[in-house]
Image 1: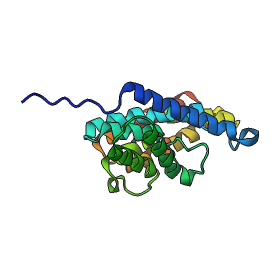
Image 2: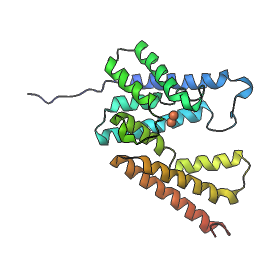
Image 3: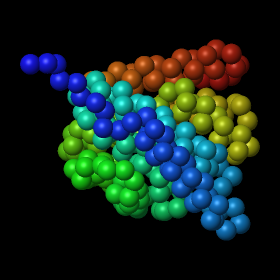
Image 4: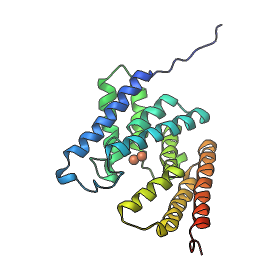
Length: 224
Ligand SMILES: [Fe+2]
Ligand SMILES: [Fe+2]
C-alpha cells in the first residue's frame, strides 16, 4: 500500500482569484457610498486596510488550523471571505451577509464540493459569535481566534497610533492609547482556547508591553 498523498483541494491560483474578488468587492462597497461614506477618513474604513486585515487573518488562521488539525482549506477560505461584507453592511449583519456572498462565489466558480461550501459558509456566518469559541466547529474557532489575534501586538499598536493622528491627539496620549491596545489584547487573549493561538497571543501581548515600557522610558512624565 502506497503512502496516501492528499492534494490540497484549493490551488494557489484559486486562492488568488478569491482574494482578488474580495478586494474588488470591498473597493466597490466604498465606491458606492455617498459623499465619501461614513467614517471614510478612518484608515480602517478602506478597502486596502480591510484587505490587509483579511490577509493577516488568513495567514494566522492557516497557522492555527495546521497546528490544531483543522481543515486548512476550509479555514483559510473562510478567512478570506469573513469580512467581505464589512464595508457595505452594518457590523451586526456583516457575518451573515459575508456568508451569502461566499456561497454565491463558491457555487458559481469552480467545482467545490457542497460540504466544503457549507463548512466555509458556516464559519463565515458565525465569526462574530461572542460566546466561548469551543461551542463552534474547529475551523470556525480557528477563524475567530485569528480574527482576535490581528488586533493584538505590534500591528494593533501601530494602528492605534495611526488613529491618534486622525484624531489630532498628541504623542503624550500614546501611553494611554497603548494601554488600551494592551487591555483589548488581554481580552482577546482570554477568549482564545487553542494552544497555538494562546502562544501567539502571549508573544504579541509581550510586544505591546515592551512598547509601553519603551515609551515610558523615553518620554518624561509618562507612566507616573
Ligand atoms: Fe468580521
Ligand atoms: Fe475580521
